[in-house]
Amino acid sequence: MSTAAPSAQPASSQAASGKGLAAYCRGVTKHYGSGSNQVLALRGIDLEIPAGKLTMLVGPSGCGKTTLISVIAGILDRDAGECSVFGRDFSAMGQRERTRYRGENIGFVFQQFNLLPTLNAAENVAVPLMILGEGRAAAVAKGKEYLAQVGLGDRWKSLPSQLSGGQQQRVAIARALVHSPRLIVCDEPTSALDHETGGRVMALLKDVALKNDRALVIVTHDARIFSYADQIAKMDDGRVDQVITGSGITAEARGH
Image (cartoon, rainbow, N blue to C red; front, side, top):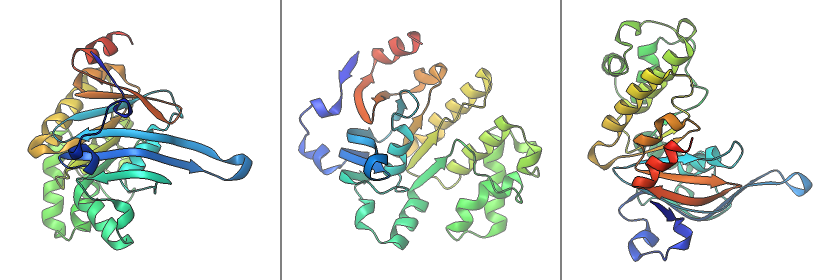
């Protein structure tokens, strides 16, 4: 059954402080440009991302989904409102602390993959571990393990240019998971995958990402994967209009 958007609900003292949540947004705004060229991308976002759950952000192109996950992950600064990740506010951190906190706690799967062209698949997966100070040999060995989990154990020596789009996507997913982040943020993780591979990747993401009260946030247009969600936040014109849980998710999937 669909529920009202969080903005329509009175905030509990726990929610108001962001405690017990992976991420918490209240009244978040963000604009690009200035003057007559200004675009208001987020118009007062209210959203709670529960730990141990998979939240999907859905809505038409240009409605603010990618901007929202970029603000939550500390890649973009918000203009106004409150936003925290596991109780910490990026705006209260210096640049070095922000970079460290993001590196330790957040994993990213970008729509464009962002793989380093001169590194092989295992080395690409190992990058977050090496940034955090792990030795190269141990990091690459762990990279191979995670490639095996996404079905690419035999392609660990391959450069990105030697992989298909779907294979590159799976390398990007392994990279996002390898350092056991508490929050995994994905932008269209199944867009380049066939139905069978997409389902396998989603099952892996949900199994690995949601252990130990981690949280997973996925931006998607792919109705085939809606059934994996614990909650779906429907966005339009820079706002979260509705948060769907329970049987409402099945109805949403059937409606597409």
